[in-house]
Amino acid sequence: MFNGGLNETVNMNGKWFKLLCKNTEVQLTGTLNGGQSFRWRKVEKSPEQQWIGVFADKLWTLQQVDDGILYKVNENNVKTCPEEHYNELLRNYLNLDVELAPLYEQWSEKDPNFCEAAKQFYGIRILRQDITENIFSFICSQNNHISRITSMVEKLATFYGDQICDLDGISYYTFPKVDKLASDDVENKLRKNGFGYRAKYISQSAKFIMDNGGEKWIHDLQQLEYPEAKKRLLSLMGIGAKVADCICLMSLGHLQAIPVDTHIYQIATRWYMPKLAKQKTVTEKIYNEIGDYFRTLYGPLAGWAHTVLFCADLKKFQENQSEKKSHKRKKKEDS
Image (cartoon, rainbow, N blue to C red; front, side, top):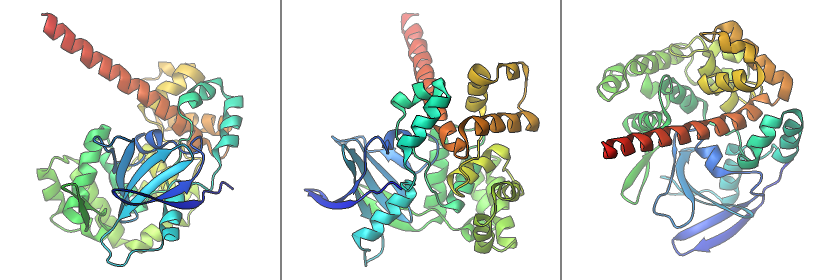
């Protein structure tokens, strides 16, 4: 088991705490900016690399240092919790009970492509996220890109969550409970605010959950094995196999789940399963075939290993997009 301790440190802006852990075990940039959660942003004006985001109904500021993570917490409760409580919340969120070094070594021995990706994408962690937030965030993710998903998730929080605090002129909110998203006016309001067809998916899925037990439906979902949990998630409007696997992996602890999207399909056909390149669409059979291939290759935590490959491919994709935009601007200037 990987143990992160707690030391208290102070800077001139207020109280900080330190979660002790090797920086090879946690890389905040790849973990918080890799398409798992959509509630984190880099603090642009900070001289240090800091991230600000919401989880556990609190506002957190995180900063990576050589021997751990500095953090501070803002919340709307008058009575704050002991440091040990915050420490445990952050440890749990970052899944620090799983020690990465031996896993990375195993995966690198099995796969030279993973070995190469791991050089830059060390310390990528699977976040333990709130199930409700994860369900509705990934409904927003369909046919969408990270910046727009982030905007939609923040709108859901602002419209239907509770205010946590104001910081530097920005208001921060908790993610709403299911019953708030099940109100009759939700679909219409979300459509007016740019959600498109996802507005109906969010509204209908929230109503389905409330009609089938509400928080009990969410609780029961946590007790199910991977195949049954995925099957139950597929009963929600707007959730297909890929989104269901994202929720299983990032909220339910099913670390064998492999969400197969365009990036993973391209990785599979380019490096592992070239015969699939002839396929024009990812059918259910091909989807399962890709997942089973990676589960055989990496073992019971295959979803974690796959996330490292996804982060590496996503960065390449973003770099290519930036190069294309730069090239277009240059052509326009030259013309």
